[in-house]
Image: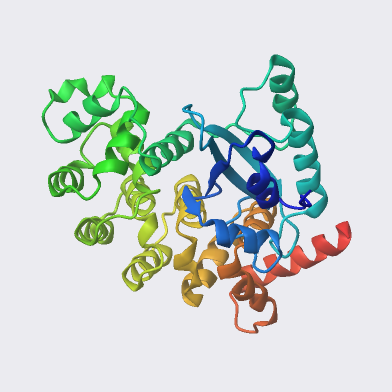
Length: 355
């Protein structure tokens, strides 16, 4: 029998005893909802590369499984696995998770679990329930990727966004329908025009829902350029947050680096507004912090908050492979803002005190 040392091993042999090959896909739900190629995930599990975008020192995964011979809905696990200081899966935790799954489901994870098996699965400490918006983004991507039907809210949401429904009907739109509409129609020029022209004037719940859907999408170039122009001219913090999160897919581009740099040079004076903006940047637009000037300004701004916030943000961001080296190099820099230098010194002292 094939040795099962990783989640990939288990998924590869699942269902074999029942002549039912198990197909699977893995999605990263840690920050932006994104698929992970099987080969990339296997490399992560072998310790050949760190997990790409962890959140709070964990990998938050959506695992989708389905049988190649049974006509049934996919089976979904939402799994939260801890990572070590290198960004690799904690071996003991992963093996514990696998032992619970194997004990509860046996060799065929796509079979319908009994009441007892379901209870065991619910007691699994590595299972989590995503918040509504992240869950909607995930289901929209999965249903599109597997060519499954949309939710019952899809047609109404798409019709409203395209201007084919009365404006007051916005209150009846479902969150899942909005995510489905954007996932399947983001390349539609009419939809792009409607959203980029009205995003900041539509009712706040619609702005919020669209932002939470767009941050997981790869925006078409023209739409991204239009929204970026709005970000560069926007003064209201609420609008800036809507736009930077909507533009999360553009965070690696020079134009977005420049826009983020402008925001970091002119942060709001009100502390709550400033932190809301900074947290949004760190959570969704971290690639823009690979610009060393942006990173130093960002960490200096975070340092102006209390020590606990600085420590929490630093520990979260230092797990990101793109930022780890840049953040660690700050400790050897001699030209830092005094407030940032003090925060880093306090972090070292605090870390040694808990070692």
